[in-house]
Image (cartoon, rainbow, N blue to C red; front, top):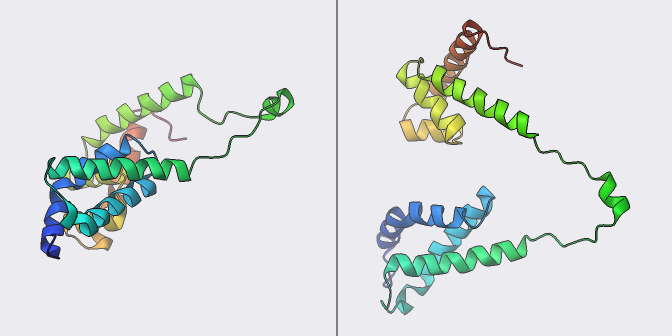
Length: 174
């Protein structure tokens, strides 16, 4: 990589992307910021490859770069603190779910996971990738190497089947 070999960079990314993603996700919550830090880390490694001295493993070197970049990202996106007086505090509304709503959502997620197991394997796989792994339909098509329209039609069928299963289980889809 220090000699400008792009295939070496691709191999470095292949071997370390998952590790970096987990590491950075523990420090940042925003998916775009996480992706930015990971990309910045690999670009910094590419630019600094000739300076790598080997005193630590390559993975440790990458994690150190990522840690510094994640810290900078947090500092850049930290909201300025505003003073909170009693009058202002009384006007604030907490939009988070109440504890009973959280439990209801968790129970609903358990039911959906159980019902998803009753779908054909290709439909269950799509539901898992889209709803539990957060992949877009286009990403799913690329992962599974199938056309976008096939993903869309299978998702339609999967949703329709889940609606039928929910109805049969006596669960209202509000």
